[in-house]
Amino acid sequence: MSTTCMKFMSDFYTNRMCLNYKPEDIAIACMDTALHLHGFVQHLKMFHPWHEGFSVDLTEEKVKEMKRNLLRLYKHRFRLGTSADVEEILSSSLEEVLNPEKE
Image 1 (cartoon, one colour):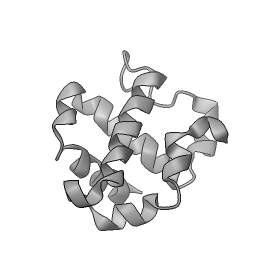
Image 2 (cartoon, helix red, strand yellow):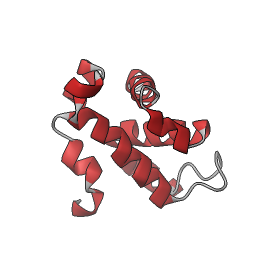
Image 3 (spheres, rainbow, N blue to C red):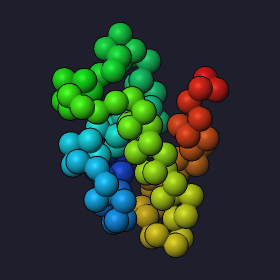
Image 4 (spheres, rainbow, N blue to C red):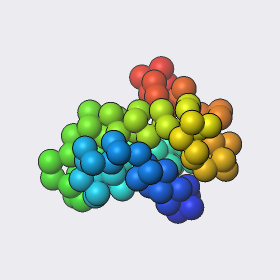
């Protein structure tokens, strides 16, 4: 999971949208996305929102916005040149993360 997080952050920082967010918020969004994709989100439901202690002004809506922006990079991977192995992880879970209310 740590490798996935690092690849998410690396890819997020290759785009100028990273200028819109604080670094710690980007790290949280990348970790949240990786937790979701690897199936660990259910284990953290009792600590909802789990990231509250790391960033006092970060809202759930802002995390979702950053996750959507991150995953949109992978929709356009050929144009943006993102990590191919992260794309493999996302291929089956992209819709699920972009539309979590369907769960």
